Image 1 (cartoon, rainbow, N blue to C red):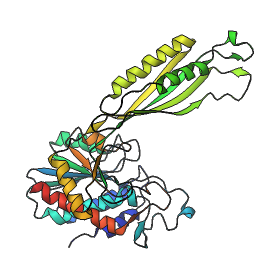
Image 2: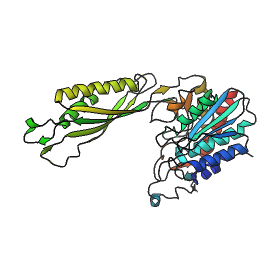
Image 3: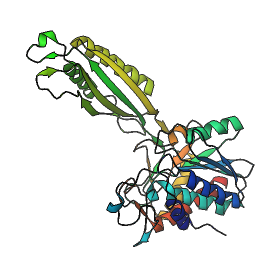
Length: 376
């Protein structure tokens, strides 16, 4: 019996799974896939539920990756429909995770089940409960287990929502790198009327941030827009208007292209801090965390397969993009080529998150075509 991706999406939405508590939908998928001949392995780590499901033993191996953990629903009273009800209204399916990304997981599970019996190679589904959270014990844990177990994928399709407005308009062939620096400038507290007896860390921080925001890091590369740097916070905790504070803190987020590495940008951030600190007599401390490096899957056989499948089912030739935030593709790219293709992302993380029912079926058909063309 074929699996209806719309009904499966409803089933998954009705199993609340606010990150990192995604055990219920992971168990549901494991039971479903096992019943259709997939060998299912739970790859849980540090309390995070993860699933590795494989059908077939021969190569080549095509994988699909997705997550069933979701962000909190917010105020349920603000929703038009129960955020955990999987309600269909006026052709749209409502619920937390409908867009991001339980519908895509349901679509690739349904497509894989439908294609598995006649597949000459192997199909692998990797589903995690730790994408909306820290990400360290989700897809990364699955890939660690695969390496230890001798399991490999030759290519992988990610199911994150990739289309800004219309189904089929965009696929992701890469992602920008992302990093955040938490910056602390420490000076000497004092009375604002006697600045000679103090060292103002705010002035040092302003100079530092001006140096950063005044630097053009690049003009973009072949597949990426220009690197961006944003100051996302600045604070002293000081409520007294006549006190020079002892410390000033700021946050800086950088989304970078393949002209840079996280390590090189970290060195630049520290060098600029040393220069600003020396000029203003304050000490800088930086806590830098790199969420992921930039990557690109160059246009070629895999992207061609995905493009053809999207065009055949939607009538649109998708744009090959590297825009948007980070995703678990940042882990997968070190294992095999990865391309992401999914639903319209307009309502993800919002109240009344929803997806067109027709789009779920369309996405399942796209995944089915990708499977057929990949093994052809």
